[in-house]
Image 1 (tube, one colour):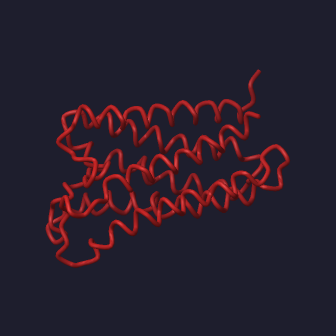
Image 2: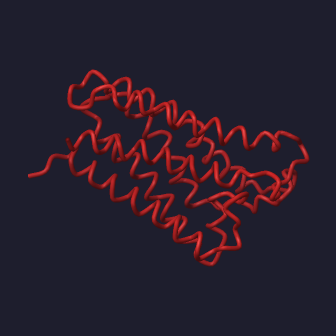
Length: 203
């Protein structure tokens, strides 16, 4: 009979595949959201928005599942992964405004969505690092996750660098502010770390 860790790791890998697959599909189903400067969250506002919500839930639960899979190696630091996973799961149920909405006109709902997104985007690299270092002493896992956590930091730096123009009080998204691809690459890199973590528990 498969262990809880194995079941959690397999679920995590499947959920990651579903999340990434749905996002790729949405690029074709909702081409009105130019991926070079529109955020992933905006796919929830289109005709096939339910697919983006499922992608958020799948991605968030994949992080929780890998925390369960790593519980024997990284306890209690793997709980930080559970904390940041609240971000995408919560964002699945709270829509954002269009990124072309002036900041002063953004709804309270959109601000809550942004806070949830920030929890994941800003918090995941630290959570991955803490978990990776905690798991490094387990011979079955080793230091691979600690070293691999450098990738989420690099992705975060690129994303933050692309959003500098939003620091202005009157800033509004436009094709000149190319945040779309950094947003998407960050998601893939973050979930790539989660997939690697799941695979280490299956070796």
